[in-house]
Image: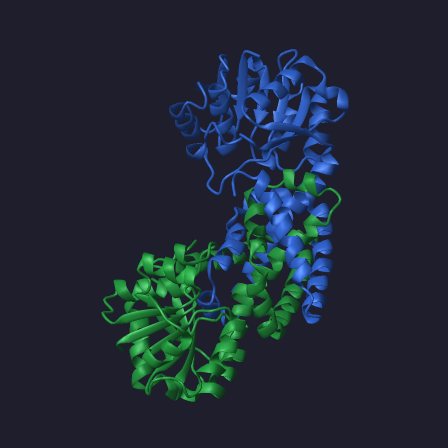
Length: 283
Length: 283
């Protein structure tokens, strides 16, 4: 591929540009974003130049949609019939069922959905870095398995590996079910905890009695609503499932507490937490 | 006061010694711990020398019990009738009702319970630092208000301020109710989340689909069981209350999710999370 276009040059999009360059990609990298973001992204070396979405369609062999989910859903239909022959469109949206439906309808096998499992607390191209994806999974959710076999898909997957990520293939359903547990449930717990404590009459005293544990368990409650609005709108059913499961598990914790029998639960929890840390460079 | 004794020279005990020195305390600081810990603590400058508990009773004007809760409960009865006249015993145990009962029985007004709201993920005197308590609350839980008025209590409280902490007076019941929400509930949520995800057949895939959020929300699940065994044994009733309340709040989150009406909840959660960060230097 000679030209890569990135629509939405924020933390993920910008990091993808930087990572491609660092991995030796010698072609052109163009970005579709606001003028201010384009200027920052060019300065950071994440892209060579800004273009319109129309121009990106004309030029790009690979087009990464690194936009909010709702914007990806608006963008995909606009791409139908506009792309170079043999071009591949992919995305970095954090839910996949709805996006895959939309992409398949607009582009058929020309769309291969994805979700790089990388992030930071701070967003924006200023925080982008070439190493963001190193050692992290990049989930790939083909419509049908054959979509992975095209020349364009193979080349895209090889770049995922070259920037240090490892591609993991799964169905859009499995993806959404897993992130409901691994990402959306933790967010719901942090928000529920913070909201619950914030609603107490003695909230100031509770804050004073809090330490790093409280800070850590409420950090996600600072997450930006617009992102979560999109996630909830496109994965609400599985998130509801995950919440219901957790309610059952919490009931079990309460029973074990009353029985004075939580030691085994602590051991099991510690084991999983250690496993998360083995595979998560970010911890 | 001329001599301060610290029983249990770990992160908290060691930091108290370092903090007293840094704040200009010119008297003697002795420690009661294992020989290996004493050697480390002397090397770090947290204490001048190690002594037996009996010797600490003979020498100390202030004795801080910075031990695990169960050890504090074993130590307090041993102190009865052994202390210097006018000496004050205090502690750093993270639950207070049971310790206050025990201390009052053994020492009456000679015991003033406390709980410095400071900590780190890593424990031990090697991690101790003079600045650990700066800007942090130091909860003080007198048996009766008059216990704060003695000369020894006033001097102790003045040193709490001199090392940069701020003393907050509350009843043992209020203390335990607050930490059940601010500290013990977050721990139970982290353990329940980690245990629940760890029990899934697709746990490896869930880990792969996890990011920094999952790591952050399961970090507390690594906490040491012996500490939590003591906390659960001495605050289980209030922790149960907190878990039941949270179950109700989670049900509300689920309802709001189904109604597509979580925006306000996110806003309220973010507001509280920001408040926690304003007052928590550790975040």
